[in-house]
Length: 495
Image (cartoon, rainbow, N blue to C red; front, side, top):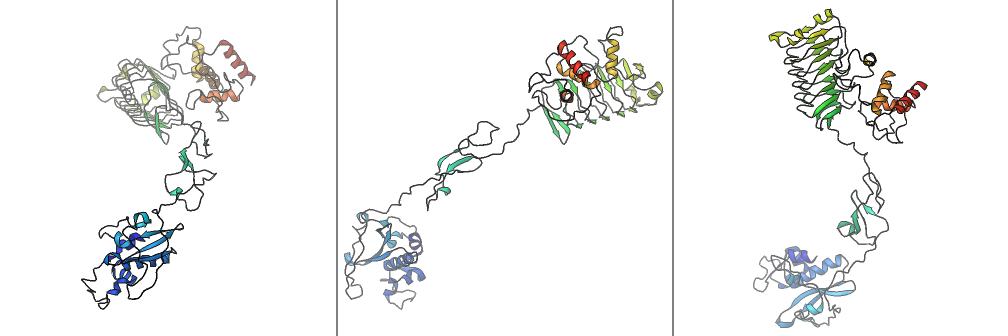
């Protein structure tokens, strides 16, 4: 109210410019009214004081108009009652024209009465009457200090908690002053209840460690891993163009039977790649898919692939043998251009079927196929470390034919290597026909989806063949002892 009165009135010198707009018919007493201040906006001290009292009356605030006649002139201001005490308010002196001064708002007698002297007899209108004013407080008004009464229950949001004041008239919820304000406290990332206030938060399942695969809707768009021996997850249905482009640290890659296509330039420039396993679920291999994979020595193209596209194995100079399924109907331009080491091609069909394949001989880019030895009716790779007269050669051939093993590389079986627990269980699983596990329940933290042995381990647990090395571990990469192998075989035959 004080700011409004001071800011919306204009003091007028009625003695020297009497009623210039003829509002009060040249009667100076019109400027002594609340009407002059509230309606015309031009008034004198009495108009300020009476307007302020009128507003206080409207809001139920006790207020009095105070008069002064000392010093040869009159003046008017107000006393108001707040909190049981009276304080002085002078709107006239508070109006500084272009700003509002607060030096005359709610003042006590110690800071006000020296230049404001009350008149006790009113003779302004030529009649005398006694005037009694309330006793003014000696000290200026001070906002009473609020004593907070903190609630017993917590308030908060997703990040913080606090106690709010429950006392009437407290605006604690609208400012930063809150009792015991602080961040929620949890034991770990999976704890969903604040230790202090009990706030319940939603906790997401822990994210699997980043394996380097970036996929969208089943399409592997990019591999950003460290390389080495890579097993593509069985959630992938297609390998996108350039997914492994220039990944020179890649040494081997196992493609799951969920994949149906390998895109263009997928393994372009993967010079360290020595082995790739292509399942018979793949129906297309894109242009330049293995361009410049100079360390590849042998590759098997399953019969599900109908066409080997342009430059698919361009300059794979280390390639010595190829196994090509009988379903291949076309070998496009330059598919094997620059494969100077290719000596043997193992073809799954007859010579007649081979001759029926549409091979692009233009410019001689596939002439290496003319000089290589074509082995008809064969889908088995020749392992360089398994000689025909080795005592285990027939067993290896049988295991490959039954899809129990594919070797350790495109041209190696590693007969003297020690088998891991994962390899042993996988052999048993494949010998049983690679049955799908009946449940996805996995008790082992070290057996991850996408691993080549994942389904085999789950199947072995269901069949009672293994219980792991503990309740939560299988230890897939540990060597499998002779005792463990015999026990696995015994349990498998018992079931």
